Structure formats: structure tokens, C-alpha cells
Image (tube, rainbow, N blue to C red):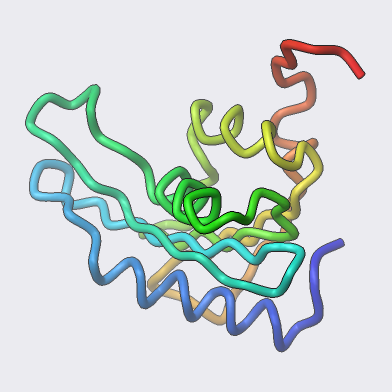
Length: 134
């Protein structure tokens, strides 16, 4: 599953760098994400909170939308870093499944960035919604 170790480490570092830009004045929970596309490009994102909490956007969706906005919608792997190393929320799981329901996810506790846990989105989200059945 996933990419080689060198690629994984670089992707985690990109997510750690993005995490520093998180705008989280309410929760103080800073998250960074980095997506590697099938054409070898990396796109990053961080969470951006809003005082109207429902308008907050997660780091994973920021990275994914940055990739799509730049013409890439085939995702190979994503790294997500946060305090405690939490997996993506349900909305992000559904969002990522739109592009790759089997995407490998590197989950990293930003306090222990060398400890990389890899899971598949399929394991976290086994029956995601699909409008069209293939």
C-alpha cells in the first residue's frame, strides 16, 4: 500500500509545513495535509476555521480542492498530520472517496512525526456513497 518510504517522508513533511499555516483560533487544533497526485505533484492544505463553525474547512479538503483547481483529480496518497494523529472526519472521507475510494492515508501525530501509520480509505470508509454505481 502507498508509496515508497522516501516519498512518504516527503509527503509528511509537506503536511507538517502546511499545518503551520492552519487558521484555528477557536479549536486551537491545527491540521495539515498533503496529497500526491498520479502525475507526481503534491498539493497541501490546512484547516481554516470560521466563527460560523459549519463553514470551517478541513485540511484534507483544502488540499484536494487545490489539486482539482490545478487540474489534478487522480490522487495516489494523502498524509494528514494533527496533534494526536487523528484520522479524517466523515465529510473528508466521503470527499476523498469521490476521487479515490482506496487512497492510502498516512496518519501522523505532529508531536511524533517519524511515527507514520498507514491505512486505506476503504478500511476507514467501507461503503461510501456513490451516486452512480460502476
